[in-house]
Image 1 (cartoon, rainbow, N blue to C red):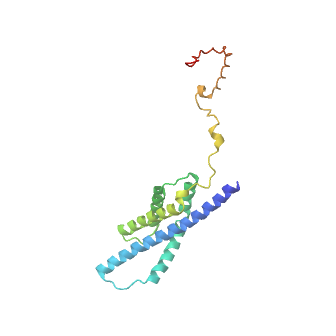
Image 2: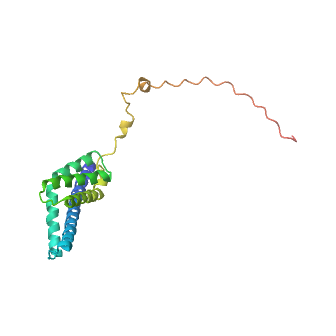
Image 3: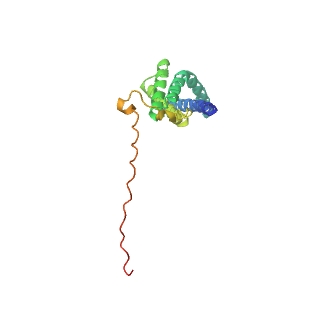
Length: 189
């Protein structure tokens, strides 16, 4: 029992670490997309102004915190389901990240168009992939292996002939007298 508890505690820590890493990756992708859009607008409209590295890092930390708070409950539900059902395929986490960012993007009213929406979906894909890499590919490892006794318990929904007890083997008949073998003596005797 303590092995299962220790494994579960370890998985909870890995899930938390994976969630923080996914939120950071999602924030970085959104910030990167916004920076690319701003750069494109600056090249087209020449609005002036320079974004400093300090402002970008502060924005990344701020955006990571916002993403972590907004997506916490839905992501927790997805992670718990994945742990309980041992869902380990990367596509589940990528699609889950896309669904989370899609829901979050619908709640925000600051969208300017399709490009923002696509950056959000790409960021969700990246966040889901990062979570899978850190924690999702080992989902359900904390659970005990299947009980070996369940393999020998009969299935009561099986056909009747499967459940019948095997017949006892017949006792062998008494052996006959051994046959006398005839040997040919070697030449020269």
